[in-house]
Image (tube, rainbow, N blue to C red; front, side, top):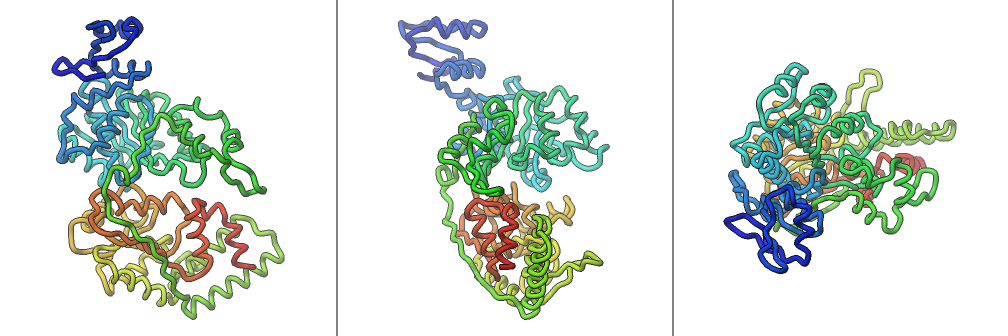
Length: 516
């Protein structure tokens, strides 16, 4: 097979030209130029038909598109965009940091240019609406207009009614204007960024989104972590692209891929990873190690002790938990509450049950270790803090030694943008103290060479995504990931994450490890 220019045709050597002419009869008529050769116009529809017939013809975007923007695309970005143009519904599973955002935008722009697409709806994390998607539209598609569908209902409606090519909305914002989105007739592509948020089909967010995608012929879910915990994670995502790939009910898929060990314990069956891979097709997947030359990542564990006050309070909590376990059956909810209080204490705060305020306790050993780790960094530092209750106190203490900014749920959307921009472009702040839910997706923070988990977080998905904030394209320094801990409980959570288990799902085991 050859691509022939300038006539933009595909030259095929085939044994049955009539078969291809039959399926391409309503397109530009193929030309038989020899006993076993056929010239077919290299258009998108012809290419899709040929691929469906087993001829691996390349997408015309590879030879008929000018790839606009401030930087030249990598080969893997071109291939990703090409795959998107050939499939109406396809999973984009490229690892974080491989610049798949630009690939999706280029593919959409090409489809717009050839008249196949009018407008695009992008659904993404709130923290990535402007600093990832809006910026990338500006970087690679300056000739296109994008609007943020954000704010009050009135502001969102005004944005939806404005004349633009790309409409960018946060996950939670869909429910605010769901009826208007369903009524929109010119949103021809729906790009779902961080689709891993939709692994649970029982949530109202999933059900709402699932009802929306029925009107979209082109749906491109994007996630670097489709199955961070178990092969069953693939079931809900597969339904977004091709429901026929999976059983109707989740339990059926779970019984196929998982083996039950006890009432609450399951493990993947042999071959379950292949099953998960198969149901997530069609898909495009590039790993960073295969397409980017990045510096090495070093992981290290750093241990500290509890202060006298922390030890005293921890002993009191443990004794109360042991006494309660003797007299009452402990539920997962109760266990989670007590384990979280112990984790907060180890971080440096106790929540007052009457006022709801977080009261600091002496956490000098942990703070000293944190400052020591920051001092060892050669560039900027990201500190991941699992609890909002300690993050402000911690930032104040770090601020006595290094310039420090905070990024958590209490920081407004506008302020977050300012903080991220200052961290990326100015000398100060040197340290960014972050809550994982705010910075686990989309952000490019390659100005840092050290990422410190101040304490373990429960979510394996969030832990993986947090690391990808600085281990991505643009990183030029050797990277260090530090895991801090002061008690076996914390190291148990880290170990669970290493084994791709969710700490929250094993809360009763964690609780038992404390009281026994």
